[in-house]
Length: 315
Image (cartoon, rainbow, N blue to C red; front, side, top):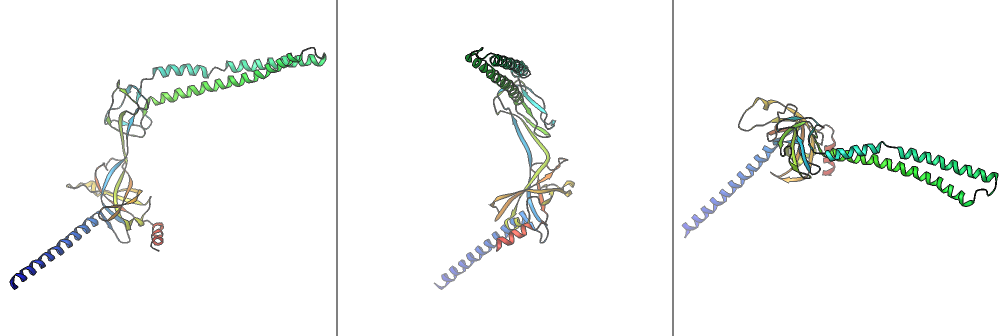
């Protein structure tokens, strides 16, 4: 009996020891993972590892109205300029309507006629009033009222002619707006990466036509510990270096400069409490490609604003 009790006690101690070792290993692994994600250099910068590079300017351009594509100029891989018309719908009927509206909007004959008619109506009224001043009741009161009404009518005819003239100009502007909707313009300097439609295809409102991206600027996204989020602001400068796994390239020694442009409003439970941030970095030579991993160094915020906020929060 005593031997069995000793065996049981020995097994129990082994189990407890194994549990303690596993727990210690798990804590150490979590700490290593956390340290790998964010490293704070005391009194200096915050080093954020495992950051991912993403494009900022990437859009899929579609048609603003249904129709038939008259042309889609660029092919995949071609460079385009901001404001360049890169695709358009057929617009023959709109162009014909515009010519008609343009003629109407430049025709002020009705306004000039109405002004001449007004002058004549008032001259006639004044002449008859003068006759009555010389010879009382030579012109009946009813005739005078009729002449006064005709003069007022001439005033309203001018207003009506001016209104119709303004409406014709608005109609021309409306047709011009519709013609602009038949065009697809490049929103920025970039490269066409996908071509979904070709010349002659029928499209509906919102159908995808082209995908355009710009590599002139990228965002570098990572996670910082919540206690480090007090140490920088939007606009804080950063330095970025590529971290390409599996290979070693000379470009990984280069440093790219940018600034923090976004600090998330929510805490993410990744390796403890972290906050997602990203920085905007210039990429004029297209070295920082989307999907690359990088290390971001958030430089010290010298304004002292965050430190003051942290002190107030702790109080």
